[in-house]
Image 1 (tube, rainbow, N blue to C red):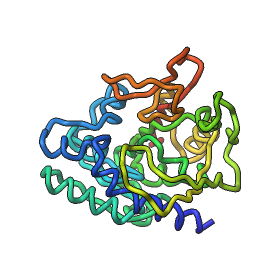
Image 2 (image 1 turned 30 degrees about the horizontal axis):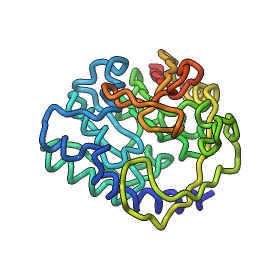
Image 3 (image 1 turned 45 degrees about the vertical axis):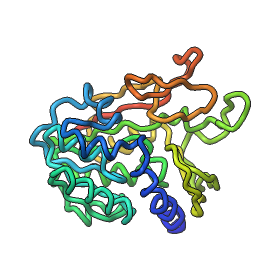
Length: 274
């Protein structure tokens, strides 16, 4: 199982500079405009509410654009990611924008050992994160371990319904497991989800889908109380090319025809019991 970290880290290490250079992540917008927020956090904001003064940790923070956005909303942020090149960019972005953000290099499952137990008011994890983790029950224990009593989790991620679909077929077709499996889904695909001309060498990834019930149960078993579950018909990337249209105002993608057919992402909030 340690191989998944090797393959996935190599993939993310190589792609981090291309993501920072892409207009999709808006690195230059953050530097130029002190009020700029990422599209992901802008979408989350109505449900996220006021985070000013909260001590927050962003798990799987990548190059830190969402982390910086939360900092700009007033949270005292820490970022954690397993990719050293991604964190180098995140630290550079924080320095260029004058943000005080503490970044740590670690895989998710070691987060409590690295950051300490019960230190955070908010655990935030954004879109496209938990599919890289083999054991969602273990993830729930990490979330519970990081939060102080009364602290909350906020997660928006790809809906497992979307995760079952094969985007390479002429028609949308369920192909992959809805529920978490012991063995990973292994992909070997060039390119990435932003516009770039870079040709990558590390293209093999190991991924897992997690059923919505499994995600919720992992949090309940970790001593959290579910306070919100919302399903959305959109995601921030073109997950089904040829079948989705982007809303320019929200930067979200949804099915072009009858978008109510697909739960594309979800938001969960949960509070650690006192």
